[in-house]
View 1 (cartoon, rainbow, N blue to C red):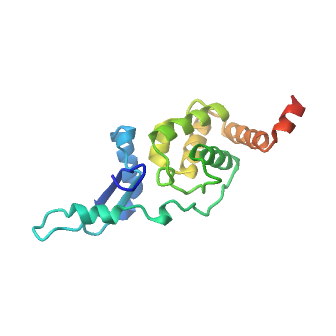
View 2 (view 1 turned 120 degrees about the vertical axis):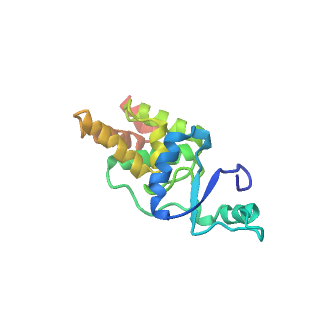
View 3 (view 1 turned 135 degrees about the horizontal axis):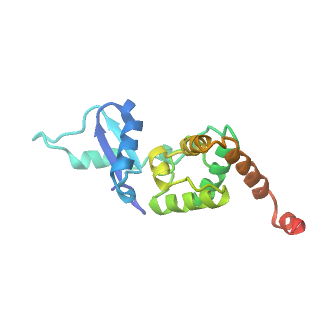
Length: 183
């Protein structure tokens, strides 16, 4: 656990950072939501004490939150589904916007907010196949959008979710007065 305020669970791993996606997916399937690290940091070697034991203080210092961890990713949405998911995610996180490659959990998300996000996605995008485990496994808007689109395609309705997302974006852009006028 690191950070001031609301502490975050962060994992330190010695090994190849190329396996990050595989490790994150494996952890998401093996552990309960509350035990999944918000960030996994890879090191060539973990720091050791003079006795050859893990230097827990040094590891904790290396894992302290960095300003760039909460900076939004610069990539914008590539389609209406990503745009709608980014909009819903930003609202749940209480921020102005999120990038589609931005890690939900590194941006302040936790298991409660993940559950809230998925509930809103299911309701507002009229889909019954979004699950919290998807967000823990993919961690980003782009990854979640890809999983949902793949499931929709397997159901034989590959364009439905994109159309619902477009409708959501159109409605969410309306002011309260415009909504009342269309009543």
